[in-house]
Length: 316
Image (cartoon, rainbow, N blue to C red):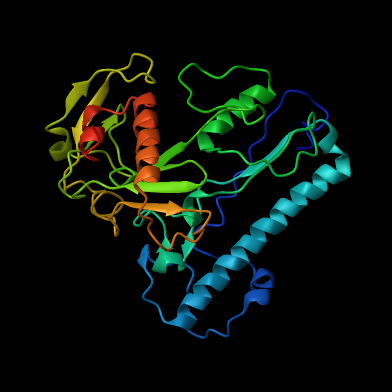
């Protein structure tokens, strides 16, 4: 950063990856959370239901707390650097992350295989804009797609026409957000309610992957996956580029690891975050559900969701 602190019009992204499995941090960060555990190393929980003994679960959490403390220390060094060189007067500062992590809440570890609870999706966001300091907490719906328009705005640039996000430096009238796992529920929130709508049968739903890069995390699509692929027309956001439309099959390397065969919950539910912030009791409220379905359909339409995406959720 010393190369840029006197310059103008620069951007630096710092990606720590942590806190992430394995939960390993130097001993000095673990000391405050020592559990007395004398068994094997417990720093990487299985993605799924909590089946560990209480003391084993406590050790997993302690190692997570330790690595969060490490991240906090590293962030503190950056804040100290800003203080030391008075960067706050002319440098924007943004802190956020990609997702949360269940540590036994809802009787689950991790992510990907359960409902998208608040612990997973309600992520930190701090913004310092030297032009408008001192705003404090702002009650507004935001999501990760807002990051790119925000950074462009900081540099005086307009977002691309196909961007769904909006600059967080400006007011917006967003009523709801849409989010989810591929092959699982489609979820929406208006800040008060969260609604999670699943297909009737996760394993037999009609669902496709649309892509110009037919590969999974570490391997290409198999010939069996591609044998029934067709060419689909462009979506609104693909800049006139057609896409491969590939049916999801149970023989896919990802089917039982991330979607949809890996999902451990499949029941549609509605939560009221005001009265039930822990999302412990699904709500029966036809009026609120109808309103959330309206948001869901509008946001799916705005994102060019194909016809089968509505059909799999039985949305007209």
